[in-house]
Length: 89
Ligand code: SF4
Ligand code: SF4
Image 1: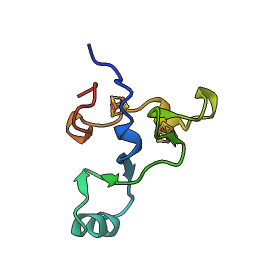
Image 2: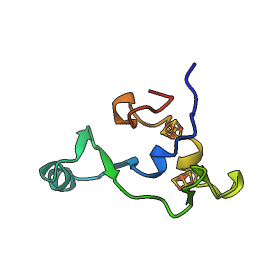
Image 3: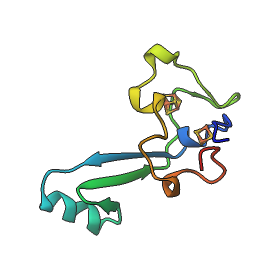
Image 4: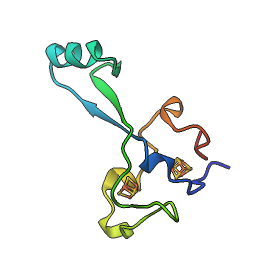
């Protein structure tokens, strides 16, 4: 069964997607090595979220305050974009 293992990896290497509007924007991101599908750009930031409790690997924000994209993670990503060892992979 696919489930969150509460490893906190997705809060230490943040992956998200955003849509660009123009070919110039696409060229900008493509030239810099971002993954592109259609007009969707997949970005990856090796950054530890300030809301992560690094002892417990749990988010310090309660559900109501957690950003929407964190609450629905990883439903909007392809499996290949998930961290190694993620329970949803
Ligand atoms: S990387 Fe996957 S298993 Fe680990 S906390 Fe994030 S969603 Fe859960
Ligand atoms: S807000 Fe919480 S769930 Fe979202 S990246 Fe930060 S620690 Fe993780």
